[in-house]
Length: 260
Ligand code: MF3
Ligand code: CO
Image (cartoon, rainbow, N blue to C red; front, side, top):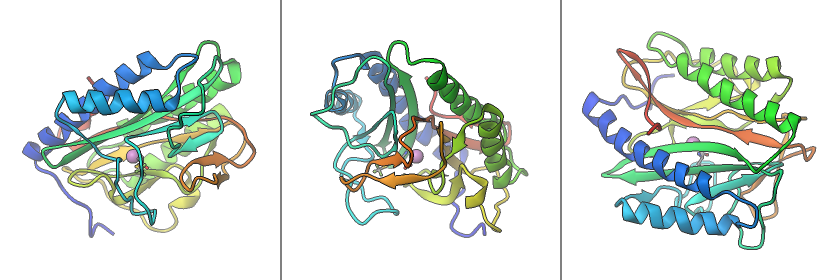
């Protein structure tokens, strides 16, 4: 099952880290700009400009992911409330108080990719959305600690799924993290829901670099595709949250690369 999983040297991980740092910086700028009255397209424009200033190439813009037949037409995924992931940034949607705005962004620098996502609450979002966000962030933090050589991929999946259960929320089916490095999406797939793991498992090894990205919803693990061909929504319309880090498995343990 290990076939196809890239192992990166210390030098290469340093390069991935460069891309990841830029991603983290730009996500911070974007988070500061999430306010009532702003459109997802405004955020898209900021992301492109911030990437340009840093000599970084937006990794998703015109990228064809392995799970799709077409190229993604934007630099950002902006997924609001019941939108789970891959939300196309729109010009005709206005962010408002109470929204949960998840922003997913990646860049490529010098041939190496970084990928990260955050969920930003707009003003007062209420207790339920707060719990959902806390659960998702907690799942990411706990899963990161499992990214240790000798552990199994299933340790990460189990940590994410059981954290969702502990908080009474649902890990969405079929979407998850992935290996990353020279390409945005590499093996292995890192499920958020234990039903997606099946019988295959992977032993984590020094040099693996993975994006871990729990996506939780308040009411269901089921999703549907929006008419735009990209945006994924919860089937029951309940809100969703998403956090993602790019993490290297090193001899000194997990190394979160997408931090400033
Ligand atoms: N972090 C997202 C993912 O791994 C990035 C989506 S890339 C896109 O699925 F091009 F498909 F948008
Ligand atoms: Co990702």
